[in-house]
Image (cartoon, rainbow, N blue to C red; front, side, top):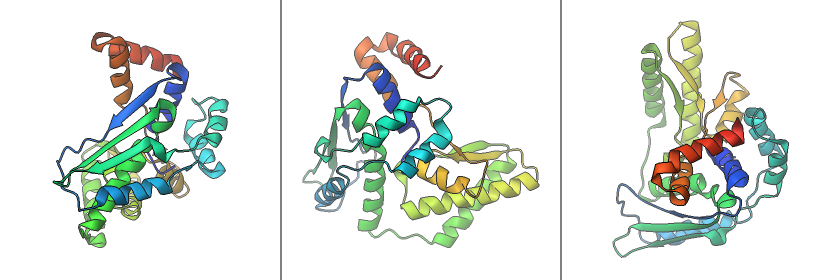
Length: 248
């Protein structure tokens, strides 16, 4: 459950409208990063450890907490039997150290690799190059930035799963944002911290902050697939029509 909510809503969309669709994702590093030698091999070791990964009953209950109003009951039963297959993931590294990767398989399963892989790559990279954080200083900066946004009337959410320094620091950031948001209620700040896209964090923090929302609808892959099937002129119309057919 440590990934963004749209993974499940897009997955259900695939099942509803493109159940036989085979899809291929390519890893694109916009920063053209040079990764440490052997990084791809160590990444594939982590991928292999995720083989047969599935959702626990508690995690499915957590998903229900935020989605029961628009997910059908059969989908939770489907998720109980869904397991990841590491054979669908392939990463290599060129002589310069750039990372190349592909994920290939049925759309209804491979959609769940995206967040897991991007978060793992980000965390491994920061760890292997020896990046360090002054946790308390970063925490203070997070709180100051949050207070500025709330005072300015901004509504915002956390969507940092794929780019995080570490899972532990991601959790600290969300709790810091919650703490300042609670103070904002008392001091009548016009802005609001609404929640997080990360299901695991939303479930965990909702125990302490009842207003916590899990944020997420669709990602641009829905439009991209519709463009590939129906052409670019029809992509948006077909995607939204089918999305409405899924969710009303």
